[in-house]
Length: 167
Image 1 (spheres, helix red, strand yellow):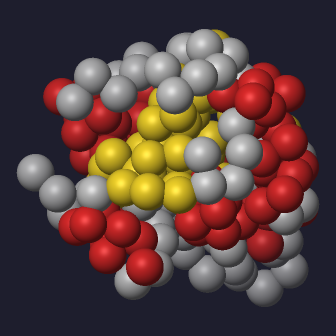
Image 2 (spheres, rainbow, N blue to C red):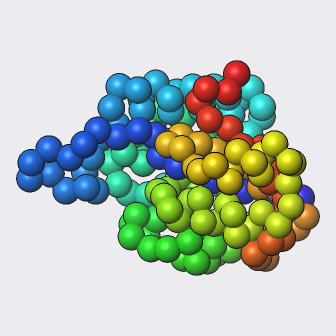
């Protein structure tokens, strides 16, 4: 069994004049939410072996908030998680996944699209929450029967969907 953790970056502030979208930092609530999610992950023993993180500032700052509260494993920063689609996200999961667990810190709509695509089944409450959208700092936990290198559409089971508001 392996687990894929899909995390949308925390809430970022609006871009200031002349600032690229890529460089938008987290706002105060986003920093707090990233820390809350790190605490929630630690309390549920959601510990990735490897983290793939978008190079965008808000994703990197989300990772910092998590890492202050829980272990995030080895980390790789990838520009593709900012600029590419959900199909690319799945290729990256396959390329870097193994028999353990992988955390992907990315953006919407790619994170939501991938969570929906790979979750062929799941808990009723979790699927209902995911169907209502993927909020900032939302975390989808998708379990696969085998190696993540062989992850395919519909093969996963959505076992949890957390937001910073969850205890």
